[in-house]
Length: 249
Ligand code: ATP
Ligand code: MG
Image (cartoon, rainbow, N blue to C red; front, side):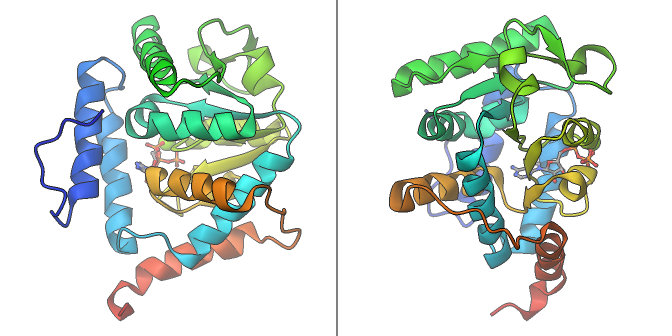
């Protein structure tokens, strides 16, 4: 899938690969104008983390997976950057959870929706998965949001009890939490509104976090929800990891 000139031995290979995926997605019309800025903000925080999954991020990842597995109706939300960076991982995770993915974007235009849906459906076909890909025919609205960014599927986001929304905007995250859902965010910035407001926040790079979830699914099957899980304490650990960057071995 990735036709990239960079050498895999390059120390920034993973980062270059992600940038390349965004460039390709931009050419296909999948991204909003601000997509690269959002990505750059994430990269800066990842640099502070040392571009690795921390112990606290792994703890959040386990809790997120356990929560999705325990949900009656989980759903995975896809925006332009998520489709560009980790389309296959999102489809594989939805397959493992037997749930739908729903394309749901902040700056909704018919052209961008079509480009993202086409990409998801093409990859689903290549991977040979039966995952429902929603977003093409929204018939409901997320309460508390104005305009096209509120549009969603009744059978997807609206009726879900747990939702994975990687790289989500703070407003929408808040609106989903207000609906009483378990809201799981993947966000490298532990200080963003999304990271703060979510039920569970994984402070890790998107493809690393999803890769870990898929590994846990394969190696451990069903995980247990930790009833003592402390969202804010885990976020604080994320901030501390960044502040202690110079003390790392
Ligand atoms: P908020 O609206 O929650 O306050 P924001 O406005 O600062 O956040 P947005 O542009 O709405 O940020 O969302 C992008 C978020 O995604 C940023 O917090 C950024 O750190 C994060 N991000 C970008 N790329 C990645 C990635 N590959 N993996 C994880 N997080 C990422
Ligand atoms: Mg925002």
